[in-house]
Amino acid sequence: MNYLRIFLQVFVGIGILNVWLIRSGKATDYRGRDAKNLREEFAAYGLPFWFFCLIAVLKISLALSLIAGVWVPVLVQPSALGMAVLMFGAFSMHLKVKDPFSKAWPSLAVLLMSLLIVLL
Image (cartoon, rainbow, N blue to C red; front, side, top):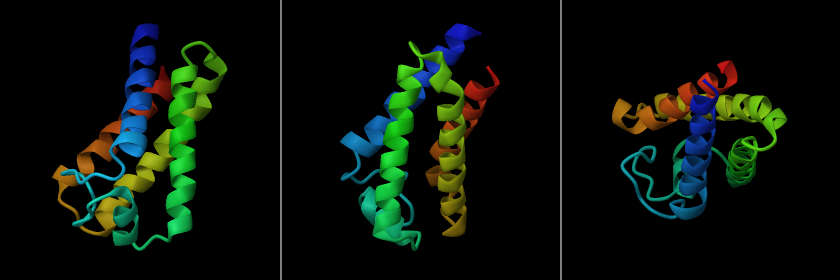
């Protein structure tokens, strides 16, 4: 089970870093409503810019902590739990604006993977 946890830590960590550092300014099929980038997506949810900045710092920090947790295991539980909370919020925002499930499923998948990391 340890290898599964490590795989999930790295997978979730790299996935979140990809979304927030590489693809944040790009349109994807998963953006809320008709948003073309992450900043527009937060605006579509009715969230202020400062909240976008806070979530960016939290998600990037937690993603890095999940990856670092491969070598510093004490980081894993709080990082995975924090990521699960944030991904629950992301999934909730998709529900709030009545996005189709095809846009919401990645946030739900990362939420479930984060909870699995906590349980492992």
